[in-house]
Image 1 (cartoon, one colour):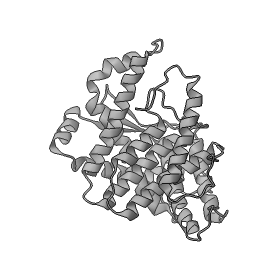
Image 2 (cartoon, one colour):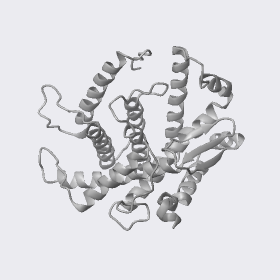
Image 3 (tube, helix red, strand yellow):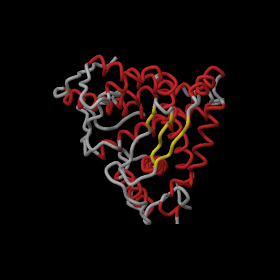
Amino acid sequence: MEEQLRPIHYLDHNVKEAFEHFASQLSQVRRAGISKATIGIELTEDEEPARTPVADLNSNLIKLNVNHLSYVWTCCYFFTGMQDLYYKAAMQDKPVVILEQTPVVNKMNHTFYWGRSLNSFHSEWPSNTVYPSSNEPYVEGANTIFLYAVCYLMFHELGHLVLHRDLTQFIQRVKGRYYEKTIDDVRRIRNMERQADSYALDCMLSTASDDRQRYMIAIGAIVGIFTMFYSLQNTDIRGGTHPDLDDRLKLVMKSIKLTEEYHSIHMQATSSIGLQTFLKLTETEFRPEGKNLSYADFKELEKDIFDLLSDTKAKYNQRWPFNFKPE
C-alpha cells in the first residue's frame, strides 16, 4: 500500500547509496571538508507542493522533499522516452520530427504533466501513469538518470554546507521578512549559487574514470537543471537571487568535456530536446529570422534557442530592478 501511495520510495536506498558512493570517491581534502561539517540528509513527506532541495546551515542538513523527488523522476522518465523516440523519428530523415500519439507517448505525457502539477499542489501518484517500479519501457533508464540528477542537486546543496557555513548570519539577514535586498546582496547570493553549481560538477566529475561516466554525470546535471525550467509557467528564466537558468545550463555544457563523439552528440541532443520541450510547454513560437528551421547539428539549433531566450530575458529585464548583464 505504501508503494502505491509514494512510489518514489522504491528508490530511497538507491539515492542514498549513489550519493555515498560519489562522496567516497572524492579527494581526501573534500572528504575532510564534508566530515568536518557533519552533514546529514532529511527526507520530508507532506501534502504540500513540491519544494526543491535546500541546505540548512544551522542543522547541516540537506533537506529533500518527496513530492519534488517524484517530480524529478517524472522528468527523467519523460526525457528518457523523448530521447529514444526522437532518435527513432530522426532516423527517418524527415526535416521535422513529429511524435505520434501512441500508448507509450500518452503514458509519458500523463506521467510528466502529473509530475509538473506537483509544483502547484500535492496529489497522489495516479494509477494510469508510470512509476519507478513499473515494468514499462524507459523506466530502467529513468531510474538511472534520476540517481545522477538527484545527486547533482544534492551536491549543489552540499556545496553550500561546505563552502558557506561561515555566512549563516548574512543568509539569515537577507532572508528576513522585512529586509530589502540591495544589488550587492543579490550579487553575493548569486555568486554563492554559482559556487555551489561549480562545486557539484567538480565533485561528481572528479569521480569519473571514463567518458561514459562523465556523460552520465552530464545527463544527470542537464536533466536536474531542466526540472527547474519545467517548474515555470512562462519563459521568465531569470534567476533573481540565483543565476539565470540558461546560464546554469551553459555552465554544464561548457564544463563537461567528452572525448567520444557519440557521447558528445547525445549530450548536445539532450540539451536541445530539453530546450525545445520548454518552448512547447510555455507555448513559445520558435521562428528564427532568416532561418528555414533546417540545422546541421544540435549545437546550431541550441544556439538559436539560447538567443531566443536571451531576447526574452531582455524584455523581462525592462521591468526588473537588478539588470545583470551576462558575464
